[in-house]
Image (cartoon, rainbow, N blue to C red; front, top):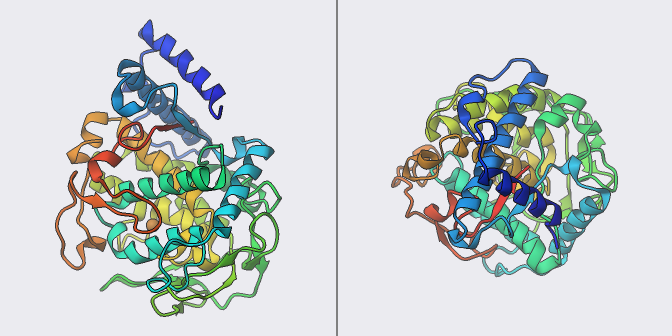
Length: 410
Ligand SMILES: [Cu+2]
């Protein structure tokens, strides 16, 4: 019964698609072509683009009933956190806490620090970090990862809802601590960390031959003190945690047991600079090929821009927020990557045939192709290890309504 209203919506769309008129037929002709520098206008552009993608998804499903078992009847609709009711939000965070209370499947001989089912996902991300960022699998891997996490919440913790996403542009407008997702209430994803004095800026290093990128610190920095994840323990990492003052902290390979509180350092300055509505619209409208799309999103090395992906991550700050490898250790990761996936979904549907096929993949099996590795293709296998299965080919991950998937975004 989870999708009564969305099914109704979809059926409505299916009916209107059956009697197409020039105005109702999804056409990209009337869509914006360049991101507005005005935040409010850019928000409107994004709403228009998302509407186009949703219509396009509905149209495909209404034309092709047999397609992989996905139809308008069983289509999941992912929504923004602030549009969920209090009850829906609580159901989601309860399910996350449940996953954190279930025993791990990862053998402790392999990852001694993985104590829970939640940790299985963190461990998989740590183990594969060098192959799934700035690589050919980045977008598809995180799509499958986020979806598999959603399935675990549903199948193992009785969650009846759908994976929500976090629209950074909304938080950029009102400020992180004032936005529904991070206001620290019982119906948020918990809020800021306790304020602590900082030793200086964050310095992101790691790329040979390039100077470090400086980022400001935020208004927290310590343990999260309220909301559903107040008592949560982060068990794994850090692997390469960027600390205020420029230092980096590591606990070996990050796989041993290292229980500590969840820390956040909410940083509006970062979110407003890199993940505002204009930046999101620009990331969708400017890139004409997937190389440019995914590089813009992650930030071209040396450009000084960390992209909308980096913007969301570093705006959370804290530990594990500032540690790429361990970042799924903050439950907000999955809402952030819901939004990343939504942006990809919109971009794909603007030129569906090209962008869901072989030309929708660019890159190799390693971080910026270091060390050199084979090109990623539609036949490349994605394996989430002990977190979830089964291993699947890239070709099954290119559409949100094909392969294992059957979801859309509002
Ligand atoms: Cu990642």
